[in-house]
Length: 277
Image (cartoon, rainbow, N blue to C red; front, side, top):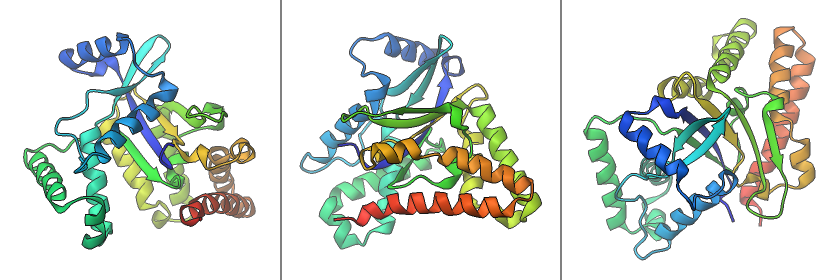
């Protein structure tokens, strides 16, 4: 079973990499045995579980991953490196700060926790500040993540296996334009305070990690395994966010309120499943 996590991924054009990395990723993309794109998340989860169920568990690999998510659009290769070590470091730092130490040690022995923290400190101390090209969210999807996309960019696959998925794909340049438009509408009609910190962080993240010709993907990840076919078919979160922004720009406050209530109810009901028996 996939984790109940959604992902936002940036796929860089192969031409944006250094000659060495470009050659590596071209060979990687041409190699046999790679999982199909729709099964790539399950492959990453299998690798992660293999580390966690060992004794003692290995929170983060010793070396950075040389695996990636791949896409081909208009015969052009796009690469989203997994960055497993960096993402594991960041996730464990969040886990440690939010979990009481005695409880955290029930999951990860203190010796491994200290090793992971020391490795992360050394990496940051080296001057490395590269943000990950993948963001994740457990049990829900932050509302700002819907803003960069349009409904026609939606892809829904319903099945009983790991291929059950809902995702959106767009060009990052278009995604940034939509975010900037949304921020402008919010400022003009509500005020500067209406642009949430999470929206500003998303815009900053894209500016830092995304090549101008890159792609942006919103992947519901494991969440579709929690939800019925009807729920997924009726999920129009991206379209509703877009409609709400345009309604706000036109001064239709009543429609804004109705759409906001619909979106809030949908995602509160999903997040509540975290505490379901």
